[in-house]
Length: 289
Image (cartoon, rainbow, N blue to C red; front, side, top):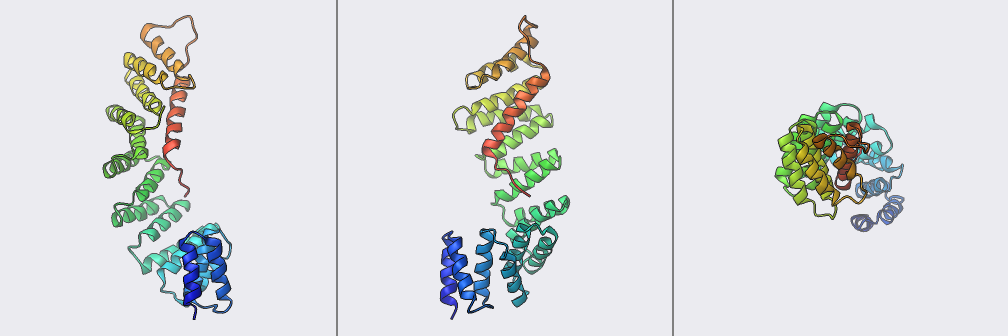
């Protein structure tokens, strides 16, 4: 009987005790090498531990049962962890053939396709996953990141707005919506977005980033009085003092150059770009594809 050791190994896995789970499964496999439950746990725990033999366990499992979609997905993940992207894609496609509506397989296949440079296929899989699981905003986050990396700012803005509608309190999505609107020159939308961020982001000092965004909007508009006002507001929250350069630049545009050296527009743009990038890093977890 292998149910007891398999149950014990699964219990360790569900508790996040992957080393104990793997040890229990591997020990039991010595007596029962073709037990599907033990192979599944051994493969899953090995994958969590980034062990090289994860693909071996899943490979034996799909040999025993070629119709096991979960085993094919596990094999795909194990192959991907070893850098075998083409083989991983083949395994994920087989899993999708067996379970066409499985959300995780669609996500895995989407990420794998993107890693292979097949951007349109990747986005198609992820859009399907989003349709199957509308509450999974992680899928839309992946879509958004792919669109940004591909330079498809218009599409990325649509995705960001959809995320803000689904979860109005999502600061990361609000940051993307505001910044993409600014990049695309949709200045009214950008201003509204940065104003919302002032109210949304509760972290002390984070209003600085929203003010910097508003300064950028008004600079684009040529509204130097408002740019100066927002720069002064930003200075109250700025611990580094970099905002003083924004004040100096806006004041020079409004009142004329003074005897003190004034930063260049390129320097000001860099200060604001660095600030907005810093804000994004504080709220948006980088995704690896």
